[in-house]
Image (cartoon, each protein chain N blue to C red):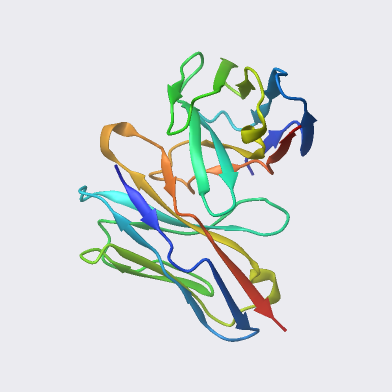
Length: 114
Length: 116
């Protein structure tokens, strides 16, 4: 089974800090995604990547950046954390959602910015 | 842009009963995929079922089945013989096939509680 691992389950950071959320998948998937999950808002796409060193903005990219230097690793960066970035962050990967089982998700990182 | 609407924020059902979760979506495309995901308290998102828009036959997976009404843009999930382990958040999601995009657009989710 494909496994998507997010480095931290819980994280507490201070306002203004630079924050790195790491995601690693072990099945050679081309596509990787970062979503943010908030109660009553569902999941919203922040950034995604179809290949190494390639990235595209999702629906809410402001305040975030990403890095994909290796195929298996997709990092989400909060350049200067703010309290409105307190949320659950979900990473996902897919080989080809059209023929496969859709996305495989990580277990999420619950980030609190104080 | 595509949108996915789950109008019921919360539902509860007794164990062994049948429950239906509703989902509607808006798109101008004719070819796409629809998904239902489950997120239990462990937070792990799990694929429940998927439906290809070009298929007329409704998808089924054991106790889970969908009622896909393409003209009405409706995609409801029926859970038969509900079990305590079905307690979770359920998300409906849409995937466009245009432009090679693999992006999923999610609804806001619905909290299902199965009571003993």
